Length: 326
Image 1 (tube, helix red, strand yellow):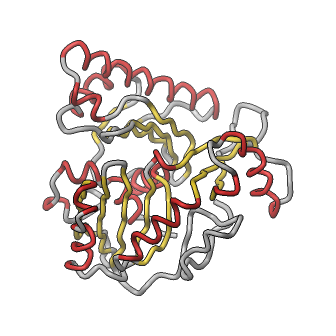
Image 2 (spheres, one colour):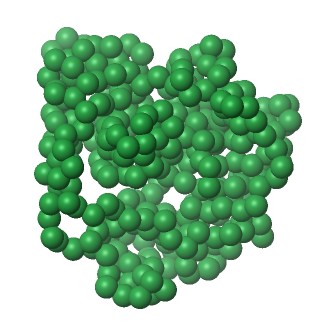
């Protein structure tokens, strides 16, 4: 990742042309770290105590849009004594764009300016109103084409709004991240760092497939089928949705193998609605060569017994944010 800011105090200077989205700042001395996930229909918030050998989940809640508007989220932050705690914020995928672009052949200090020029016609707003960050896409072992990189772009006004909203209720923003990298953090913490692993994530409003090795993101794809789509279908319609998901997984696995030349991905983790996840896992295991498992945080976090599985399902990006270690 490039051009991280060392200090977010001074309310992250959103007027600067080359500010990074993935902000970091010096954190308060506390064993608690918060993850705050923005969603199209609300907010998720988790608090992790990382003082022990294994992190403990102290709280895990999803607040719908009405609860946020009515101040229940702000009240919970105050009531639980979380004001001043460092918080890593995760943006909802619907508010930013994630592109793959060819790496410009320029000096390092000119890289972001060159990327801005390259993506300006891909946006539906002026490039001067955008904040961007960039991180490398792993080099293919099979192809000799140009080096590629990921570019994340978000409106500057939205970042300022996010900062203002959370600082107004007393949170200390340690970093702002994206959903794909927050989920990568969770996968990296629950698997062998040298092994490839795929993830199928189906929250209510969107679907996402990604392939990681340790903390390296190799592939990410947003798909049209969401968790709500699965729950609202039955009979033939549900089977059609499940078959489409299996096809999307197979396409992703095939692309990864052909693009990077690093062999087949051996395992797929599934995060899906409670009412559909077992059926999805069974069909995927019958159809794919990779082993398909239901995602489980039991070996990573203490305190899971006290959390409603439905809340945990909504809070995965926030958990990944709270696990961020840099």
